[in-house]
Amino acid sequence: EPYTADPARYDGRMPYRRTGRSGLKLPAISLGLWQNFGGTDVFETGRAILRRAFDRGVTHFDLANNYGPPYGSAEENFGRVMASDFARHRDELILSTKAGWDMWPGPYGDVGSSKKYLIASCDQSLKRMGVDYVDIFYSHRVDPTTPLEETMGALVQLHRQGKALYVGISSYDAGLTRRAAAILAEEKVPLFIHQPSYSILNRWVEPELLATLEELGTGCIAFSPLAQGMLTGKYLDGVPKDARASRGGSLSQSLLTEQNLAVIRRLNDIAQARGQTLAQMAIAWVLRDPRVTSALIGARTVEQLDDSLDAVVRLDFTSDELAAIDRAAQD
Ligand code: NDP
Image 1 (tube, rainbow, N blue to C red):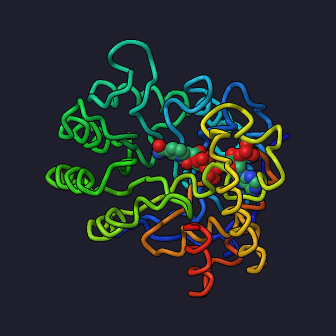
Image 2 (cartoon, helix red, strand yellow; image 1 turned 30 degrees about the vertical axis):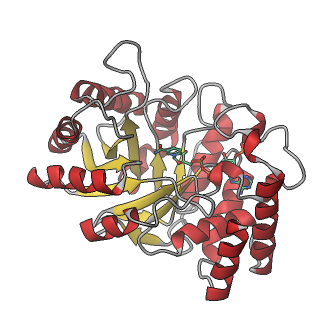
């Protein structure tokens, strides 16, 4: 049935945060299409999730060339929803895509970050999504076999051509982030955003990267804040059949050790005491740091999305709660 966006979508429930020192705000919670939106998933479920997200103020959708499976199919499915439901809302949307992991056969679309690969991949992504430009284009990963100047040169070209309004990098360490920003700055292209993993269980960004981003004026969008679903209540009573850990993919069941489950149980208790689900607390936790612009979540159902988006009801933490979370996560 035809889609009419909820007129109340900007009624103040979703906070929007400035991305680094840029002029662009992102929703505190953004939605990624890595899993659950591919050609092997039910299209109408994905469409319902996207509609619901937009109705609740989620203005940013994150993609990559190879999200699926099969590769490219998440962008194609998003393109269908773009055409049928979101066409009149293009200027309300921040769309991102990336290149850097394996995509097409042969030496130019394989794991790498040559100029050839990034430029061709961006053109393919625009076609699949049915848009003239993306808002953000990312170098998806560090490629040690390509000079950083070449990879950043590709971002500069996409930026100059208007195929990407802003550019970003994903999973670069602090030192390479600094170098990337310097190369871009020579071309007067700001490093708009960095996309690292970050969660209560994965804090690699804390020692150096977050301070580097603040200094550079670069925003930060934290992916997998739910640790791919581990930071929810779903694994506390066994592994549900439909959960990511059952599907033999990116979340290995071997992570669900008694020790990890004990940590999750303690965190779940803290969340309950806050009047939140664990998913909501885990999302609020990455947002407690003002250097984090947005929490980039995934969702397989509308119910999960609704649960997660309710994180914005309580984003603040007492220092006692933060200390208890640290203790629970370290034990
Ligand atoms: P999350 O940590 O948010 O995990 C999402 C998964 O957790 C869902 O698919 C679902 O899995 C489960 N879940 C979500 N909400 C709930 C809930 N409220 N209650 C119970 N279970 C829930 O993020 P992802 O790992 O999916 O990553 C999010 C996005 O980040 C990606 O789509 C992508 O855009 C980006 N990303 C970027 C990477 C990069 O290299 N730059 C790498 C990885 C992700 P289930 O099937 O178990 O129900």
